[in-house]
Length: 121
Image (cartoon, rainbow, N blue to C red; front, side, top):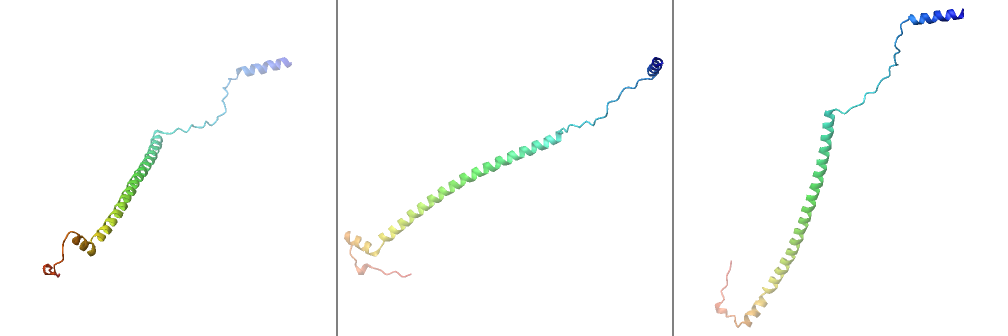
């Protein structure tokens, strides 16, 4: 009897329509893609950062060269001021009354008080 029951059970199983087995649902993680707009924004930000950095460096280089030129000009002005002071001192020494009188006597000039005119301002 065991066989008969087994056969009936087999027949019973054969008549049942088989349902396809469904795989358990798994949540697929969506790959996060960077959109075209985001790419454009990030590229623009990177370009602006690079451009700003280059501008800062070039401005610093320009400032350095201008400052070097200014220092050179100030050095020239200081040396010329020193030369001017020396020349002014030499003019003061050479234009003393005693030196002019000595030079005039050396050249043969005499002081004639009749020819001297006094000028008043």
